[in-house]
Length: 129
Image 1 (cartoon, helix red, strand yellow):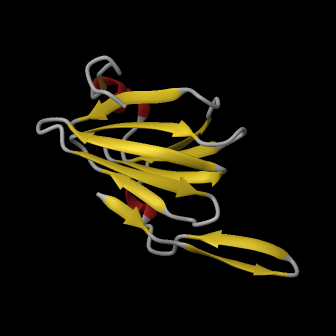
Image 2 (cartoon, rainbow, N blue to C red):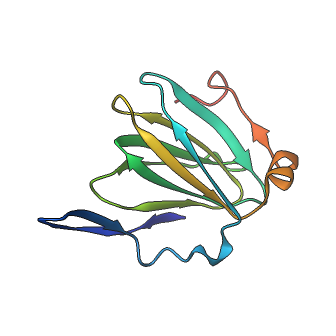
């Protein structure tokens, strides 16, 4: 688990954001989430599925909790830094947009049907944000 660092290139034509070390050969599907400011989306976990998170627009506070030990980590993802966060199987994840209009791209290594059968949720009452 951790950040896969990217970068950006800016010139008179605009900006190119890239994460060349993100190996997408394991990715099966992708979706985007537009965050509502002030809303925390947590806690969803998977025992078998790995996910990767990329701030397509704006910035996010992302937190992870190991499902068995409850060890926690947190990250800030910003569109200005072009990093991908890998969250492996066995972790809950949650995030909140830190600015209006923030968009998170999420990549998964399994199809939707498999993901739905591997879906574990915890409430914010049981695991504090």
